[in-house]
View 1 (cartoon, rainbow, N blue to C red):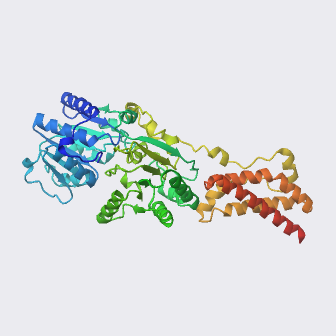
View 2 (cartoon, rainbow, N blue to C red; view 1 turned 180 degrees about the vertical axis):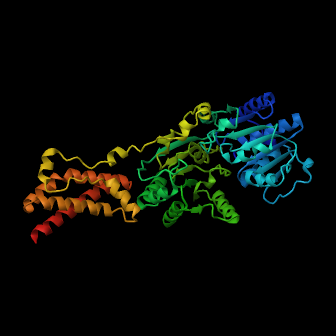
View 3 (cartoon, rainbow, N blue to C red; view 1 turned 135 degrees about the horizontal axis):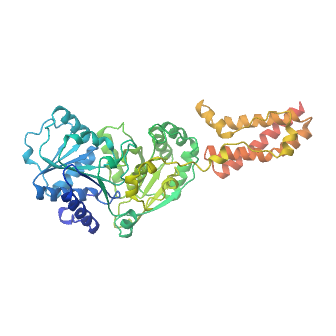
Length: 502
């Protein structure tokens, strides 16, 4: 849910929420049947409170029922609690509900979209006298399949990011117009949301692959983010910025999340892992532990981006990259809740996401997103490291002349690195191959050890360049790259000495 439940006495709309309710309701009154409206408000702004108030006013004015659609059971239960607080009788339609014999007892229904779709396929009169349909998380296009069952009604979609999850089904095809609520920056300025402080750690994403859905694949994520160097970078960031703070870590895949769990556990930090394979009880127990543990760390895949509210979270780790503007905002929004003793939270970005989308609180023209979604779905982001990684070192002409007996074939570290990963080899084999290449070129063009040593010195810049490339591939620290460079030179020199001593 978008907000913490409070007592009925304290449940009063904030000024910006009251304004939003008035704008939306007045527009719904003006709209003809079958005209649909979309409302945008940032995560944490109170969308559930707003649409519950709209439902209440609609029922009072038109004496017809309101249907609220959601895609997660947690959202459905929490919405039911808010409606009950507002004095609206309601029924949650879960998979256990096969029939609705006494519908007159309820003014509203909350339904999971998949469950309701199954019921309507069996009986298109399963639910009666609906005048308004409210769609929570409206950017999720799974809702569209049941809209045809509701004729001569208005549909109100609500979302933090009016950008369809399916680029082939833009939201402007379903909704006639968009009403934009208060911005993130305004909500921060008015102390309704926490200020997000972003800390970015440069990560080389050139090994990530993009799938058919336009998102980075889970497989390529797992290959990159389970590496020891990335786990080390995550721990380093935690110890520097989040030690002792309640922390959420978002990962792209289960293997990565489990690796994070083991890494933090080995350090003695209080951490739990959660993924979609957990039973309902395991999930409840894990979340209960997280709520009760002041400095708890919860690592998961993206299942906590919606339907989860823990206001005490002070650190959000994006231990992944995404091309989804919606997912970017959903993940960060989990830390934006305001408490009396919490006015800021940390966003630790380990996927170059803030470079791709700008800072979380940066203004977005949501009306433009709504009418031109293709410009936001097709993120043409190119990792800025790529230009350094696509070519081998270009030796000066006078040095090239000293290696005429050797092949002129380029040795591109990134290509060798990706080939090693595809074949299941350790990344370090790339260094071994490079050293073998340098050894062969030197011995193939030197008449003795003294000349070999001279050629060795002429290739020193190329050696350093390759080690630097390799460091970028594995996201190495500067200190590790320097050490790797010194070790490389020492190994090659010793091998040359042994070769010419024989």
